[in-house]
Length: 150
Image (cartoon, one colour):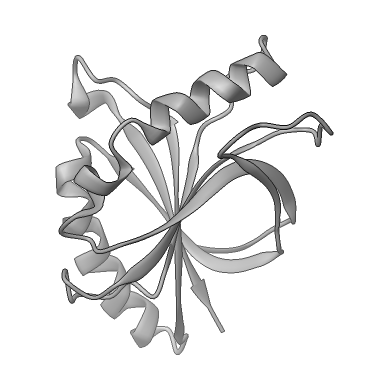
């Protein structure tokens, strides 16, 4: 667990309303489409996606705002369903999760009490940065969890 400040970042992305239970169905092909659009903009770049969960907590059926994004240099060309955003500076507690995404909840379950014990308050915003994605061998995945605190 590490406290850090993430600088503001320009991203290309899309925001949807979903719940943690319906997220996989609601996102469908969007992550792949986003990567395709980012590859058009920066073909030699291998930057990980950033997913931002606004309002998520342990209630799996609570509506949340989910932003799927990838850092880019701003471009004035129309990108259809995707838009440019500037993610603001983000003060967070960061933890690396090694392994499959279906086990991310276990890392959150350890992280959230530790955050409270350190005297920080969760703001309701969390980010996941998918640094290593391996669909063939999910145990190789590396995801940085960033929980915004004040």
